[in-house]
Every structure is written in structure tokens, then in C-alpha cells.
Image 1 (tube, rainbow, N blue to C red):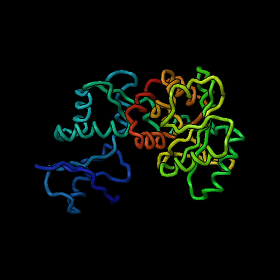
Image 2 (image 1 turned 90 degrees about the horizontal axis):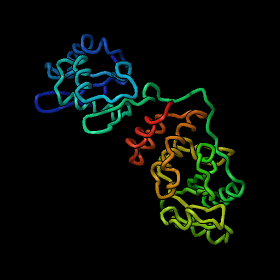
Image 3 (image 1 turned 90 degrees about the vertical axis):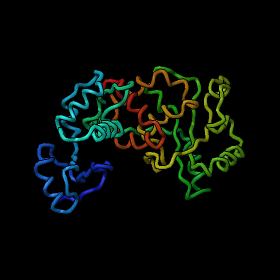
Length: 301
């Protein structure tokens, strides 16, 4: 018998359910495993229902693009689990939203994400590898030499331009570091007396954002823990997943790109592969999971 993980069960006063780590077919859900669970002492009455993953039949039942009412979702789930309580059905709808299978578009209304069938979009397309300016590479080497245990991420908005119809006059060079090292790194970069403006991301204002006296601004930015990074020529830089989430989450930095985010996502996913697990995990870290799901639902993937 596969190992069980206690998630939720349904009884007279509490709600919980059991879920196999091993994915199994919906058709064998109740008939085959109810007795097995009982025999193993996991429950002793018919208040408890065994839930298995239903993402695939759920996705195949509903069509993309159209609004799905909560009542439609309830009716579908009741067809699979006729004895389940309303509270359990509501929990499962919530679970589908949390997993990115559905997203809310209003009170009692949902839509199915176009990318929910697969955890990787366009897997046969090439890996995104941003180009890093030579001077920024030099700064990476210098900072890593001074702080060998510091996690750095460097990249440039030149990586965005290939997907954007908006051609900004100013290019941002990002040096992302852990929050505790922000001020120290800023001080070191300032002491180097570069000929470029240098500013912390939190202090970025309209003057720096739209200045025309320089083509490059260096921005010292906090690196969110567990951000998805990749190594290019031995240098840690952004993945496409991180870049797209940051564009959405850091409006104060990327204000000029906000209106065309759907187009940027469209162009990026047309050319490069995206790992949805990685994308959603980072979006959740940044409290932007719902927003990123809505954004991806707007584009033709």
C-alpha cells in the first residue's frame, strides 16, 4: 500500500482527507481503498472519504477561456464524490485555486488556466540564458571576491527588451543581494566612483526611472530567498521564471512595463521553455500567485 499523507479528513466535528503520495486513478478511488484504509486503522466509520488527484479529469471536463460558476464546480465534484459534505467540496475548489488549476475572476466565478495540464510550458523550446554586460560581470567577480559566501544575482533589463515593444531609453543593471548585505554592497559600489548612477531599488523614483542624461542606472536590489537562479558562465543570474514574477511584483522598478506584461509573457513563452512549478513557487514567495495565474491566463500559450 502506498505511503499515506494526512492532509484532511471529514468527520462529525473535523475536516481532513487522506491523499496518496503516489498518484492513482479516480476510478479506483472509493471502491478499492476505503476498506484498505479501514483495515489499517485509519478510520472506522463512513464519515471519512479518500480523495485522490482529479486534476486531469477536471481539466478535460471544462473548456479553456470561459467563465466557470461555483455551482458548476460543485456539481462536477459531487458527480465524483456524491457523499462528500459541502464544506469538503468547497475545500477542494480552494485547493484547485492554490495549485493554479483555477483562478478566481470574481465572486463565485472561475476560469481554468491554459497551462494547467502540464507543469512545464513548451518543454522543447530552448533555455532562457540572459546576456550579461561585461562591466557587470566584473562587478560580480569583485563582489564575490570580497564576500565569498554572499549570494549574488546580476542581470540587466536588456533581457526584457527582446520581449517588449516598449524600448526604454534607460537600461537597468541589477545587483541583487541578500537583504542584510544591501547597505554594505551599496557602499562598496558607491566608493568605486563609477560614472553611472547607483541607487537602491526601494529609493528609485521618477527622476532615475525616466532620466535622459545616462543610458544605464545601477540598481542594488534585495534578492528574495529561494529565488530561482541559474548560472551563466559561472555567474548567478535570473531565470525566466524569476524575471517574469519580478516584473509583476516590483511595480516601482518596472512601472514602464506593466501595461504590456501579457505581451511580454506571450513573447517569452513563444521562444523559451518555462517551468510552472518554479514559476508558481517563486510567485507564492512574493505573494503574487493569484496575479501570475491571471496574467498567464490572458495569453495564448
